[in-house]
Length: 205
Image 1 (tube, rainbow, N blue to C red):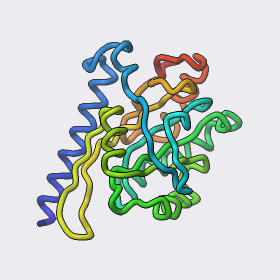
Image 2 (image 1 turned 30 degrees about the horizontal axis):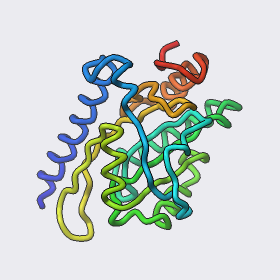
Image 3 (image 1 turned 60 degrees about the vertical axis):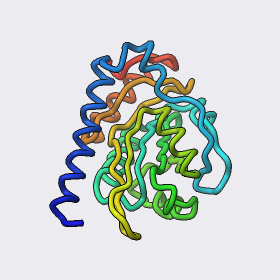
Image 4 (image 1 turned 120 degrees about the horizontal axis):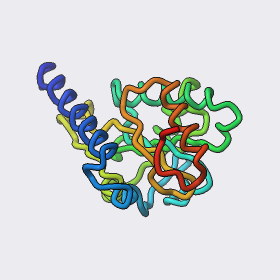
């Protein structure tokens, strides 16, 4: 596949993610009564190989991001920003975690996830999740996430949504953090939600 085609596919994936995020933020996918439907039961394994379900979200504020370890730009960029945002939260970081869910179950084994997420610039409190193709499809559907394999051979890419979901300590959807926001913006949204309490419905102050 030519470089031009790769660039077009990447642009389309980012455009889809941006439109999806904007739709959620503006209520096109429904008011909070419908956006509350973002999220739900799932059954995956973490980077230690331990079976994990939606209870991993309970008791903490969660930045849920779907990506893959071979991702060339969006995933490391987002994780680097979340790593800085985590530091900006100060003592409140103890109540916050990043949940990185792989959309590439064919390559992202627990061992691969563990190695990838060990990057010291990524959030210290990160749960990496992967599973079978059916399990990944289940959680992606629950979070209204787009992903699609692009290309053949061992070096294939995966086009995917690039927004981050902030989920509250009850496991409920709070807001979308758009791709490209800087650490200060991320930390500000997380703090604003925390200030509202565990049943926050937005990231606005």
